[in-house]
Image (cartoon, rainbow over all chains, first blue to last red; front, side, top):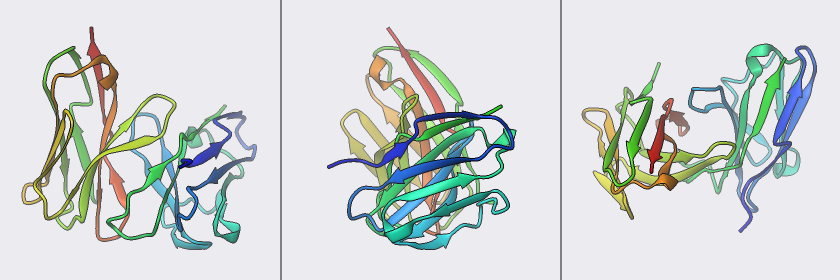
Length: 115
Length: 111
């Protein structure tokens, strides 16, 4: 079974530029998550999708971050414009459903450096 | 604000030693607690998941315990190997059905 795929794996941009990350979840997984992991910290949930609808985006900085999951499969996370503090690893995860007992499977992450 | 604390932040042990990683959390209403492994440049891999009704889970050389009343969990690694070197994260699922992570323990097992 293929795992969660993410691209690109690394990205370096200058502040105020825009960047987009892509995630392809495990086939059949209805729930998709984006996490931000700043160096030395644990992952923090940015947004959760159930199919193509948003379940939780309470910690998404909506003035600069946006995410979509068209057709309920792949997802993109965009930052526009980027700030220095956005430097982090962005992890995508998926699960069969949104239940508390469901296991989340994580992708390898995209490492972003904002200069 | 619900928090997860992991102690120690970093640990270096010689190969073959048994070790314990600690995790404490403030949320008393958790559904489950998980221990994850994170290798550099890679995503997270779930090692063990303990439901709130359970006290412990075992997988090979790993044993995780959960004490909800005191808000603590431990991950015990027996006979450590250099391949165990990684960052170990604990996370719980609370009433909002989302994972709340600790800051991790960076483990190095030396030859």
